[in-house]
Image: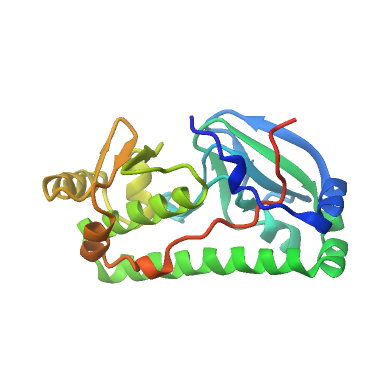
Length: 241
């Protein structure tokens, strides 16, 4: 599994003492374990340091809708801190390491270090933009374009973290996950992946994503390269202790 490059971690300067005070521990989970369960009350805030997780909701009919993929540097549990619980679950897709932060100290941190609040705001806006785009995809794009857009979005997020270089990078996703992220059946995902491969736009084999030409895939799927992902502020830096 690829490690997050230390260069991707944002130096926190004056905020670091507050973040050090907030850190309580770190936890390691195996694939399939829950970071957060929907409707459970939690008081901790997490930063994903290593690995992949998925944030999703179960619909009344039992179907799963993936809301976002959680990558190294993403915060987990912020809505639970403010509202007491979350409507979604977060589950590890791979073995993950998370830093556990004491959320009760968050108001003090935001009050005394506005730059951290600004980083939180930017992160939430980025999440909202992804959610808005996914909603538009479900209603307006065909299967091939939906999958192409999602693959390119993930590629850009990984690249901003130093986890995707050149034309290929690890993508620990299967057809079921891709299907639940873009509202398609597994059969439609399989057909879409075959179509993208045949066009020379993208290939996902053995969980390695290859995109020969970012520009060609962006043109095909409507992905705006001018809005390429930027690495979010990561609220802890350095290796797992």
